[in-house]
Image (cartoon, rainbow, N blue to C red; front, side, top):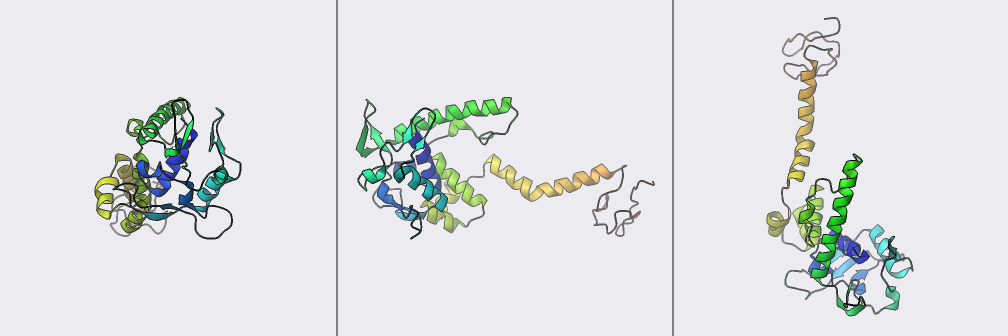
Length: 260
């Protein structure tokens, strides 16, 4: 998998945008990402990219802005163990409208006037999925948790990042109006297409909201016939003021203690 794929995934995630728009990202779209401290770091998505992309200015975290600036302009490109780097040429040595993700000719030479295709991006995403599958398998062998443990990697697509961005924002209970503003999707589209009640999200909601109740019930059950160290009556669930009470002050149930 090429390094540019990782950067494109990041931009998609933080913008909540489709691959067809972000693959055409130009250096001039990035605003106030240097350390001057003037203005708010953002990505300015222009009009006219396609029929689905809404032109807008998307704020990005300062940490991401600094990271992008370091890679693009500070002579400290993103590198991997295979000797690859992104970008191959610093962006202060290129025109302001240079593509962040230029296409390539069959011989591997970049085409600076043409962006990478969605098809090529999808190909690299599938290659990434195969690598992640091996990592998940290795983590299971070591009995370690992996971030993609419960993710169906067969469904990893170029559109997955937009869906993930919406899910993360909604899980943090941000309003649909805020999420729509950031991602450029209508509230109706968010609720019918992107904000999906997946099994993982539903389970998390149940565990968070109803898990404490199950824990309390389990604690009551464990007290039957054992030492009374609960703060609740095992019959009615009434809160006990003293841990050594012999009878519940509400229902009169005899509480089992060590002396019993």
